[in-house]
Length: 322
Ligand SMILES: [Zn+2]
Ligand SMILES: [Zn+2]
Image (cartoon, rainbow, N blue to C red; front, side, top):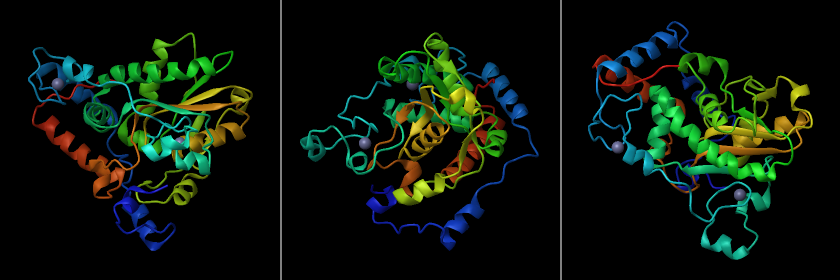
């Protein structure tokens, strides 16, 4: 598997090297001095007091909306329609299509621990902005359309998920990250999706626990990513998982290493089969602004968070309520 930085010829990061340790040290500390709740409350008030432009196309919105995105931009977010790997969902190039087995190179070499991964749309344009609004600017009402999209992706898996309700398990954040952000975006989206499929799933947040922070996967080789994830998760209630089918959900799937590790741990705890579903899929080889400079996600998050705080202070609209 080519890494994004490798694909561009940028120097590779050697795992466990001094560089990796430096990156670890650069990770921001959880902000335990300021609770996230007052910040979210303030943003919620601003959403009511000040009208806003659409955060995607910048057109002024006619009325005050909890979600500052226009209907046209939401409608423009459409499901994936490209040839995809039957297991991991990565886009298949024409050479791979000729192989005829419907699998990408990576899955042919080494299968992930989930049965199959599905995503609603590609992680770009409006969908990417919508996810960023939720994740980095705490625009909580974005969970609603994102939950609808996740529910559509999950529905694709349900016919093959056998009898009984599969457990719906969001990928957890480490507690320090959750505390500083104020919420786990995967859990919010999963809950919104579950509300649309209440008779077909059993919502099980908290089954999977993240017991340590992981460094950003950006710039790591496939082996390094797997190593980076090892031991990051554990199952808190093995009895509830035993013999059950599970669907692990997240906002974005990039390399699939996180979801595969979640699946491995769940299967080790006795889960029968594990699938993965995300709202968005970042395809290999597609450069994204946050990867272009090989910056870590945490650094992007810090920068966007600072911009968001400035926006709130300037009186712009960023609606939110937990
Ligand atoms: Zn718009
Ligand atoms: Zn694949």
